[in-house]
Length: 178
Image (cartoon, rainbow, N blue to C red; front, top):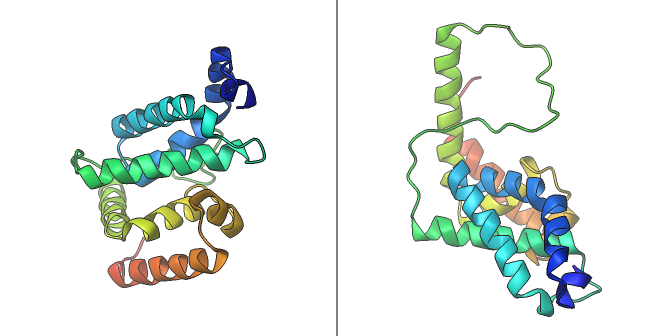
């Protein structure tokens, strides 16, 4: 990032290689649309490139890029450009599913899709800050301190926001069984 801030355009490629997958996972968990997530991550790197001069050397790059990506995802969500056609489960590289039935029954697949759809609607119903904190904590598995740094919030605010998000989701998903 320091090289990019000094005008070295060649530094953008290694920066993208290092942070692309993580940013894509975060934005995809937030937007739940692969095409929209790809656009937002590209916009994130464009903004990082155009505003590299404003990056402060003592700041860590990952939280700075994550904050840009989350803000871009929130903006995209606010504009309402996306439509909820279908929910797709998130896939993580290197994730071993563990003990699963090799061929789940059609009924089990339908129930799984219905459950994923209901959870997705519940997460989307959260207010923006709650959704951002919840996604970073439970999808990206960031610590509360990392979330506070990334979103430029106080630790207490992150804790209370996460508590309210979980409470809201419990209410919305009451009675749901996996």
